[in-house]
Length: 291
Image 1 (cartoon, rainbow, N blue to C red):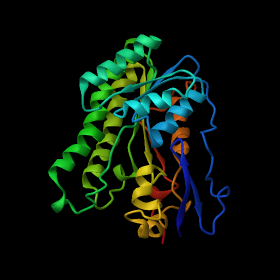
Image 2: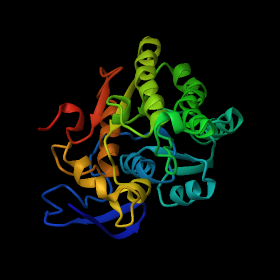
Image 3: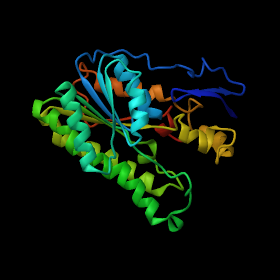
Image 4: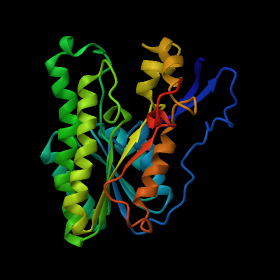
């Protein structure tokens, strides 16, 4: 089973899979078409300038929310924000409390509120797919500082406007690797498992104060990073795609817009009793072992 990249624009990969029908397999959707009413609300999305983050920002904007595109790539954040009806792009490093404080201050200055925090920023290793005994400590530190410590730093600052109002939503983006460990990426597995349990801890602490906290664990998703690793013809591990997708009952990776649809469900104001939930969007990957 081979994936072929046809073109790439607006962080949307157009793909063809030999021998399968794109529409039947749910590919080629474009911007998420799920609809909820987020009029008057403000969503703050970290890692918003690419991949899943871009789909999240577009989905929230399409449903009436003001959007903060927060990303270490300040130019990319501003460029995406310029395409949305009511948005700002801010340069922000999730490892730097000062830059987080500035981004949240800019949000409150613009809208006077912050309603939905989406902790999406994250990285994995591209060059060091090795066993733990060979894993470079500096690469471990980089991944954990962004994927776990960064989520904590952003949350403690961005939650303040929500807690002051006694209402809000926090959506943490983890990974199936936080539920079912994968090989050759030990710090990513550890960090995302931390995010899963941190989400539950946050739900216990913040729920009584009006803020609901939930987590999305995406399976393999079509992004620029996974193209370089798996889905591009020149991907570093493209030969393993067949084996990997053999464990996914739907037989394909997710599109970024499908992760965004899950986030809209969790952000929907009418969805007021889901708290501490881990929502797997993985095509059935973690449902069980396929023989």
